[in-house]
Image 1: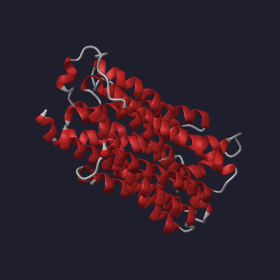
Image 2: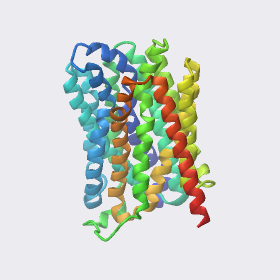
Image 3: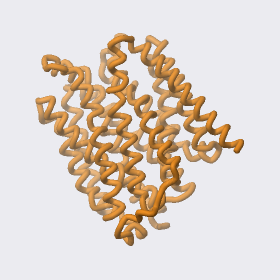
Image 4: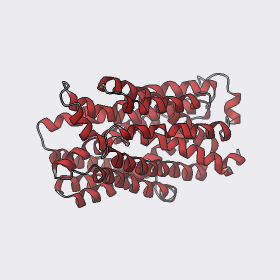
Length: 387
């Protein structure tokens, strides 16, 4: 495995495939207001348009769990090429289609492809790397995903100012990555010997605590790409490119903190890092609640990005550490499922509150919830360190 750890082409390919994940969700975020106008005459048109952003997450969640089981049994790479082709078809369908229900179907196909590709690539990271190398790569993986998000959401904002449909063409990027997966990725030697799932292999119970926490984390964070475009419009920000820059700011600072994850992990425990991440997000949401300017929103996006940038690789590495090799794909599939189930549930759980409270009040309440989670994780750490 040493040749894999040192092979730059392998690293670049894994990082390129990883970048497709965040791109799948936020690339069209800046298109939502104009897209809403196009479908305003359809019953529940506004809700359906908002659903296009989170709808893939449901199908990522469903397909990831199945993918994890399949790749433990039949190998990691058999499905990857197919998933990249489906990604291009489902992702770009919004450009070619004019029916919101058909667009949602395309987003569902996009979700299936991401569920497969993300589960495979994260499992390969766990297969190829160990110890400190795994920590470094996990941070790098999230950082590159964030940087890819910056590039694509900024491009999406620029293209949305031309027409809301054009950003959908960015999903064809997966076809450029496809040849690299066949050239440079190899089936892990240990995995190649596994013919059936070891039913005796089990992960520690704490892994379910990590899964549930990941889902909650995304429920609370995914309100940003879903609602911030509308919040900015409400305070007078009309240019889609400025909306894209605001959301991309959180992604940029997520990349910065993810790059530093390995250094942070060498000093703090998993629980402490979650406590720190939730605290930064609590401050960010308080800034949104009390700020009424574009500058305050940018500060909030920086803080939220810092928080999520350490928590995402923290969850990934914790699961990689807890999962036995024989069922690693299954457990990472479950991690992916809980990750994107949180994204799907976020608007379903949180947006109904906007019928009775303002956007500022919603972010204030979420800030209190996030502060409570921060205190909880630091408390759990202190209790566990005394035993």
